Image (cartoon, rainbow, N blue to C red; front, side, top):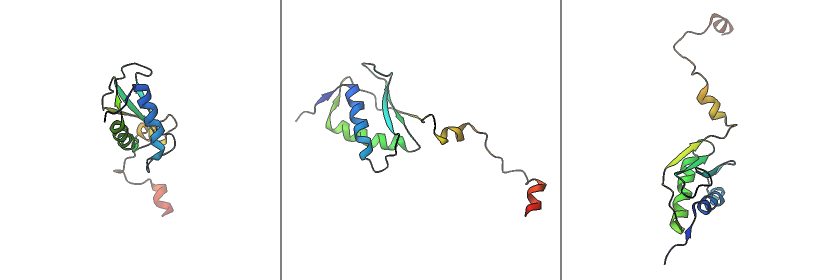
Amino acid sequence: MEKPVVSPARFVELLNARLPAHPLYREGMHVYAVPRHAEHPRSLVCVGPCGTIGVCTAIEEIVRGECEVEPDIPREWRHALPPSSPHQHRATEPALRHDHAPAASSLARL
C-alpha cells in the first residue's frame, strides 16, 4: 500500500499537530521549515526548550512512516530557543569562575 504524498507545508502542519501527543512535549514546542513558505525547504527548525530536537525527531519518524513528503525536506534539524527562554540568557552570560578564593566579606559571614 502506498503512503499518501504531502507537501512540505502539510508535513510541518502534521508534525505540529502530533507534537503535543509526545510524553516529553512542553508548551511552546513547534516546528517550521526554512526558508519559511518555500516550495523546497532546506531543513526543519525545532523551537522550544532543551530536549526539543529529540521530541521533534521522534514525531518526524512517526509521520514519515505514514506519508511521503514531496518535495522532500532533508532530515537535518536545527534548534532555535524561544525569545523568552532562560536558556538563551544562560548561554550569553559569562561563566562563573570557581578558581578564586571567596571574598573576605563572604568568609566573615561563615
